[in-house]
Image (cartoon, rainbow, N blue to C red):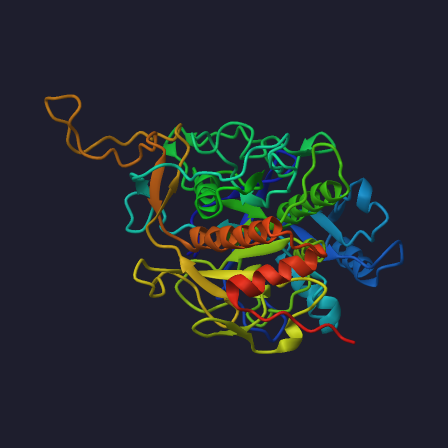
Length: 486
């Protein structure tokens, strides 16, 4: 029996659908002496981190040879690089495998069993990442439900400039990229001065999807409808003067392929670099929120050096703070990309690295976030472990929902007076919901980092983007800045 909900296909950036498989450790064949765990992957794709430039790649040659021996055909897709990074090595290759079975596991296992550890880390499955909201559907304790938010909307203190990321005096606002399901219509998030709508690179959306994907199906609201809008509302409450950049990497099924996420982040990096260079219509990105993750099939594979890890490192080298949710499995097994954060010891007012060499002065670390209850205790659904940087509020959070989100369920009670009824459990046209998950703890930290960067800019503090990012990390989390080598 599958350990995952039934999902036979997942969308990709071409508009097509890729077949999905669930790896069951009890039934799959494995030639290696490793401990396997359940994972979900694209059945006909492998991802290879290639060697720089046009040098021959023995691992790619081996892959082609073993595929041919199985009468499988390989269709290669290079990781896209836009103009400003055209001369950089192209580190990624997706390999579509066509054949009778249409499942790459046996091919991958065959190759991985015959190469050394360093080579094995360059090739892997195209994992399917799942967004980190709690609960599987209505009605589930901790899952979304309509809510009121009492009080006025968050108020910006700085006047608007000619672009959403500029104030009236020309200072750059912090830009928080929400790579998720997009941002739907809401009074807080409408207009053109808070949300950077319809951002593009070379005339195409940064992410896999455009912003006009529907929130509903014929059966009602999709499980993750409003997920990105909710995250954006949390960021806005934490830092009202931030600009929010929606990057739609997944549909409202909450699923995204590892390859498509890597491609999206590569395009986001291009958008950011053009913003740094002053390109018209582009803005530098300060903080990135990722509320999704996957667990690899090899339990010991915490050092997997795939292309996703590489592009996240490239973003951080360019001064982007990366905040990732820890996941909602209620245990301590590592979830990626959150578990690429440095292992730490959390104390009352600071965070200490277990290995100081994990902190690098040339780029800030990935910051992973667990979820707490309203009383400050760790939420029962939240993952935790030494790979979790910090804990933020993540249970029964109130934030924004698209005012178009209204499913087919009806109130249990409707009185003779048509204005009197019980709560309609899937009517979010009031604009707010209560929801739980590490998905909603991560934007709390992202908003705190944005606010710290904003206050430093208001004080006139300047410096290299990586240096300023590190100072914000130290101020908000207590994680010490590394000392650069003399």
